[in-house]
Amino acid sequence: MPHYKLTYFNVMGLGEPIRFLLSYGGDEFEDIRVMDRESEWPKIKPTTPFGQLPVLEIDGKAFSQTLPICRYLAKPLNLTGKTDLDSLEIDAVAAALHDLRKQVAMFYREEDPVLREKKKEQTLNNVLPFYLNKLEERAKNNGGYFHGGELSYADIFFTAIHDSLANACSVDITEGRPHLKAIRNQVLDIPNIKKWVERRPKLQF
Image 1 (tube, rainbow, N blue to C red):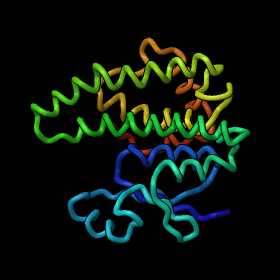
Image 2: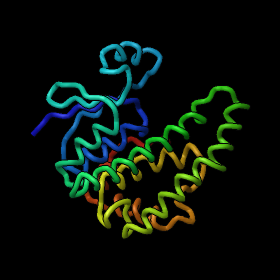
Image 3: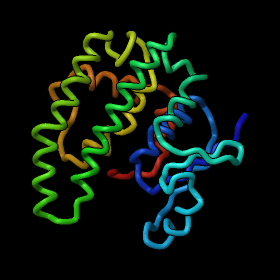
């Protein structure tokens, strides 16, 4: 069995989908958290493949970028669909979720309070409903999942970033969207993921 070592900041963020997938597969992993962005991160950054986190080391070799890592972990777990076209559709949903999370992060990290509020309003009124309504419709038309009426890594990705999105936006992102709520509940009911959620650090983002 491969040895996994995940390095990310002490937040859920883009590390959480990887943690969810490793947990789903029953894989033990080192969960390395960079606690101090001011002192620790500048020392670690030059050692990463592209100067970014998360980084997943597999038997000592470092790999970066959340989506490719998730696809790699999902494939042997049969979470990427049965055909290449299935994989294309599932990847597209995961990429859209990644884009949505990036949009939310842009306002949340804005240091100018006036500009931050303006960006937040734009995100809450336009960006968030656009993505979430599209995702709700997709789940409605796909048997309660994002693709093919069965669990894929896109469903796990959504559930993994749900809490940080909802907390950053200060809204219930599944309110009025029963199919998204059902996806989240189904994923959180998976025994290995439930165990991870129960033991992970209690964080807002």
